[in-house]
Structure formats: C-alpha cells, structure tokens
Image 1: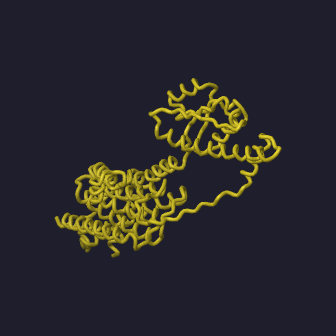
Image 2: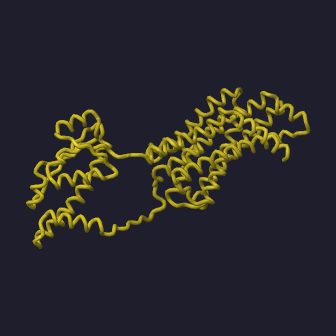
Length: 388
C-alpha cells in the first residue's frame, strides 16, 4: 500500500505541474460553468416596442406597467411605422400597439383592443412576450374595473378612484403560493442551472479522465514503470497506485464543480448521502475510463485528442448536452448504453423529485457495473503491459 501511495503521489505531482492538464481539469470546467450560469441567470427580458403610450394617462400607466415587468424590456416608438420597421430589423421581438382612444373607451365604460404585432422569425420570444403582456393588461384591467365600481357607487371621480385602487393593490398582502410534488414518478426535469451543473459534472469528469490517460502513457514511456518493477514492487502495486491517482483526480474535479455550483449559483445537490454516493460512484467510472484510456492509446497525443472526442460523444448520447426526454425513444435507448445516461437519470431523481439513496439504487448498481467492467479491463491491460 505504501508503494501504491508513493506512485499515486508522484503521478499527481506530474499532473499538477502540467499546465495544459490543469487548464482542462480546473479552469475549463469553471469557465463553462460560469458561462452557462451567466446565460441561465442573466437578463432574459424580451425586447418589446410600445406605440401610443402618450395618448392618455391610462395608456401611459399601462406602458409603465409593461416596462416594470422583469420579463420585458420596452422601447417607446412615436409611430406604428417606426415600430414595425424595428420589428423587421430584429430590434424588438414584438410591438404593443395601444389604441389612441384607449383612455376615452375605458373612461366611458367601454372596452379596448390592444394589438400585439410580431413576426414568425421570433415566434418563440414573441410567445413569451405575449403571455407577459396579457398578464400585465389583465392586472391593469382589474384596476380599471375596480375604479369603475367605485365611481358607480360613490361620488369619487375616475382619477381619484384609480389612485385609490392602486393604493389598495399595493398595500394588499400578496397571495402565498406553495408547490408540492404529488407524482414523484413523473418525468420532470430540474430547472435552469440545477440541470446544467450535474450534467457538466458527469461530462467533465469523464472527458478529463479519458484525456488523463496521456499521463499514464507518458509515465510508461519515460520508464517509470520499468524502474519501479526493477525494485521489489509488484505489478498490482502499480495498478493500485494508478487507480488511486485517477480516483483522486476525479473526486477533486467533482468536488470543484459541486462547490462552484453551490457557492456561485446556489445549486442544491439534493440528499447529501445520495449525492455523495453518486459522485463517488461516478468517480469510479471515471477512474476506470481514464486507466483504460492510458492502456488503449499509444501516444499521449492520441489520448489527449481522441479521448475527449469520445467523452463528448458519450455525453451527447447520455443527456449531458440536452435532456433525453426530448429525443426519440430509439435514441434514448441508445443513450442508456453509456454510463452518462444513468448518472444523469440519478441526478434528475435527486434534484427534481427529491429522491434519496434508495430511489437511485438501480442507477447506482448500473454505474457500479460500468465501473467494475472498466476497472477490471484496464487493470488486466495494464498488468499485461507491465509483464512485457
């Protein structure tokens, strides 16, 4: 065991001194996490043009309410022609056209139609904008209706009634809404970064383990194994030392991603015991993959170039790039031939359904089978290469 620890320590020091390896193992995952985190948590407001905001106080108030919505970024236009031109240029995703007689119609007890203009080129953004506009208009209409009720049953004017209605609306306690998952077996997915963070953990640990096979190849080419075998060192000690090195690297990278996700983006990793078990099991899968990479490729350059490509392909099939729920059943079944899909499934159970250790036993068993197969195959190949 002492020999194995010494070999693992020497291998780790070699990796730490390799700036290229450190970039791919430490900096690149953090940069991608930061990039996706900024995309997920950044400004997602849809740019919307507004026409007719100056036609009256009610129209102006409605335009103000639209501008205060966090889902919208509003821009006022003096004419419909200017707004439509901006829409065609892609400067806005939709145009809200407030009618010139909006105030007069509402003050007289009538109704008004508000047109929303968009194009098929931004249909997805426009749908989100339309939903938000409808919600804001509905709140505005409720305020106007409340003010009308006051004017019909008292001597208060419409302007004073509107002020009173808005004051009551602002001071009324908000309705508390709570959600409870009533069907824990449903195929729900974690939202936002809670899905991206664990899938990146799965992807990067595996990809960098495959690329890390270059270190074993370099160790063999420099004669470190041969000199170790010249001493009273058994081949199994070398195998154990290499396995321990890859395991520590995988665990270290997984811990880094967990910390970045939790501290910078508030990701909750679910049940602690289940999460630790899943991270440890995936680290064993990465260990087997990394050692196997070191025995399959002939040169460090092959391991560094081909290994990540294979890892990314497995990640795409296994749901690290997109949820497997959106792909055809045949592709989903193909994806589950990789360990990535089982790891992603386990994270979905933990983060979306509030599952615990018992809920992911099936996925853990499959991942342990993958890890055992990779480790056994890598150990046999490494022992064979040491014997020749």
